[in-house]
Length: 496
Image (cartoon, rainbow, N blue to C red):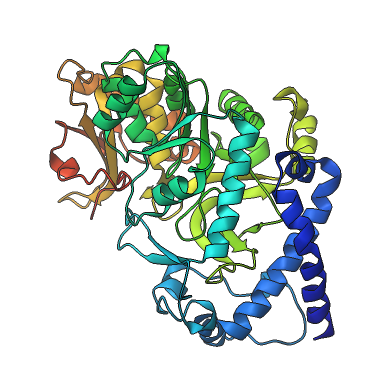
């Protein structure tokens, strides 16, 4: 009890210092210095403890959850001993109100977000006024650190309405530039650029597939415009980034989730360069991350998030800000990945003869977060996991496929003879002039591409003939791609 009171008192005393550091771009940069990292990690862990104590005392759903999981306080504190929450064992079991502190939704300043529902039934999340101010402050700091320009036109092409990302981007960045909230509407984006012309600098926000579709179909000469791009909602392959860099000066991805927060972590010049190096050097990727290919790589502030990796390789998040309406403690998003301190990353690279400092200068020394993608959004095939990012990399790495293929879905199924098949549905682009390669060549490109990008698939190919991978091409907007809702992220796993 005395230890808990000491932790509360210490963090209360640190609140003014945190407010000062987060209130100015230059002050915030001091947090990314090497000497600050051990302290930030310790304070983050301390904040996780006080968040747990508060949730256990004041959140009805969380107390019921601890009882249901058989958790008992034996006087030994370790975050790792706290049960992991998931959408299945917590969010879907307990109501929205009882998941809030005090068992009620705060009466004022609250925003209720809704997830996109891309992986099933949408869920709702309560954000307090203080919570939103914190997110707004961090978004604005990141904007100022990366772009610095005043008077930039911000074009928000994320889905608007109840969905978390689009509305939070608009509410957070309205004070730092000229904001227009467009939503995922290619014609409105084109009209806006044409209206204001190439004299402005633009910062565009959107889902990667929407932005690709826009740059591939617009009649505007985008090379006349000064545009930067921030993408989110799903991963982006390096071939797709290269393609988008023909139209945008920079392309940066932000990592977040409606379950937790937007902008938990962000790509930096260093992480992008490291990822590209790993894609060229598969041995280096295996040395760093344990598998071929390279995950998305971000950096995050350990003062605000404690991120762990479960025994099964999935990321577990604790949001340690005290101002939230509902606690988020050891929440498993089902994303596969891990974390590494800057110092540990530098040491591993050095053992492989690579200097981390060579990737970019200056560098933030915040820890890295690496993400492969949603573990429950993969398709099993002869023991190999096939990721949507595998198909995206194959398509975007080939110029003919990138021009001709708009989207895809994957499925693992049995035929009438009970033979396992990997079925890949490809949606052709709307442009009739962009024709996919002939069927034999298309199959070869996909099959050999899977062997190249997915180590497990490469190992199991001896167990089945190439015909076990079935490629189907559908005209634009037909078959499994009919009745698409442009406000919701693309669905990459075919419904069973």
